[in-house]
Amino acid sequence: MEIKQLIMFQTASKLLNFTKTAQILGYAQSSITANILALEEELGTPLFERLGKRVILTEAGMFLQDYADKILGLTEEALKVVGGINEPSGLLRICASETQCTYRLPNILNDFQTKYPKVELVFRPGISEKDFLNLLIEGQIDVALLSMNAVTSSHLIVKELKEEPMAIICCPTNPLSKKQVVNPIDLDNQRLLLTEECDYRFAFESSLIQVGAKPRSKLELADVEAIKKCVIAGLGIAILPEISVKREIKDGSIQKVNWGGPDFTTKIQLFWHKNKWMSPALKAFIDLTEEYILSNK
Image (cartoon, rainbow, N blue to C red; front, side, top):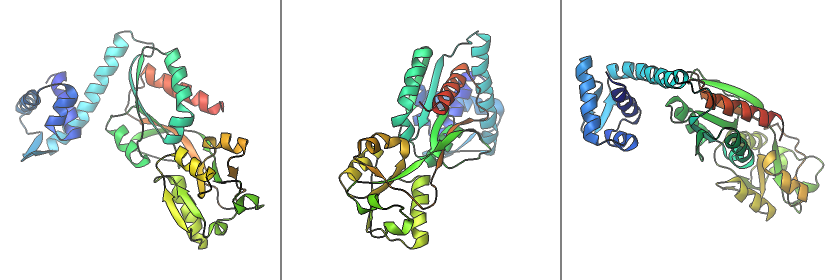
């Protein structure tokens, strides 16, 4: 049983596609097939069931998948520790929610690259809240920075940093901007400008449903900047993380209403797999990110 074979098996067991495995690892598909067949012969049991063009893991394959993850994780750790690499280096794969990507991560990454130039950062944007968990569990990303409701997971370590305040916003000419207190029922017959699916959107819409408020219409937009431009143009009401609209509230192009409804605050959280080796690069990123966010920079 060779390390190369385990790497091929581990990748194939997650993708369940030998062609994609070959493309990712840079081998010919015939080499992937031959090495996995050799591994099956050595172990004396099939690891995959071949169903036409599809492959699925056998029970033996599922057992080996757990061992392969542990063996390869320890191999990576041994190479770095025994090799004397104590300073942050190597590859670090990061993902973050849109708010973090736009308003916090650029400064964090700039500071990180300045302090740790030997770390190669790979950033994966545009990952939805519902997808990041699987990517962490599958080992496709090392750490995630997200704003969402508090999460508990048997697979992940979750580090809560601080609350992410939200703001209900409109343009200064909207009558709601003049109200002393705006309650959920006041949004009846208003046009809503909404992000794609996320925790604070669900909580916001739920607060309106509970009091019977029926918006005139709903417009779903792909990104925060588009929503802000539509609010400034007077197209409707929106809820966004307060950090994303601070500048516009300050210059008067957007009005934050005095919201009398429920609190939609989410949590800024860091996530990484509980079995992930805490490499110097990963620890440095977690420490720097925590320091940056807690210092309110």
